[in-house]
Length: 117
Length: 115
Image 1 (cartoon, rainbow over the protein chains, first blue to last red):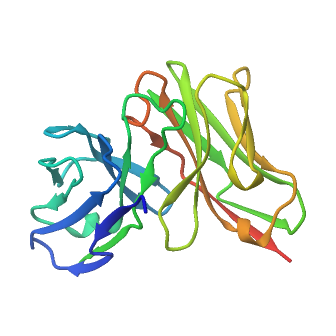
Image 2 (cartoon, rainbow over the protein chains, first blue to last red):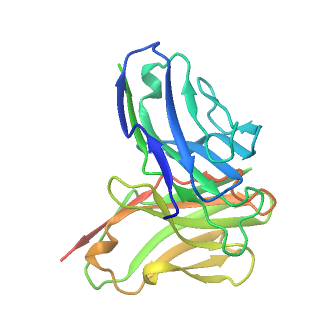
């Protein structure tokens, strides 16, 4: 089954304790992206990756890091989490990032709800 | 730069009634436009997309949207609401030259369907 998986699904942590949220896709997609969803703000892009070793900032990258060492994985790293990073995080992937033509679509993971105390 | 405005954070309809969710966009380049649906405790699922072909786009679950350049709108409609349509709906825009790279989402509209 084609899917994007995220782990953990729920996480409560404390300020300053480094954490990683994993994202994996099994569709051989080139493009992957991270979003955060906050009430009244919709989804905002944090980082995206066009392919292995190619990453770029989205609209709200501050406080986050990513890496793309393998095509299937795109972990999100919070080196020193703060309470304003409490949010619902989604990973997404698509065949290509540059075009959304034809049958290409973006698949979303189930989300990771992060609380930073 | 691109942006979208979704009018109404909540829309309530009765089962069987017309569903109309409004989206207006702003884009400095030819836009690609998307509607996504989010069911409770799930990720987003693509309903339909406009990528400069036909202006009337049909999607899954009986939804459709019409791209109107003169009105900078991409409203989502469904002739007859079902209880299962209750969810949050997001409109999104990107530039035709950037596709999914720079996808900008609206703030969402929660659709409530009453029996």
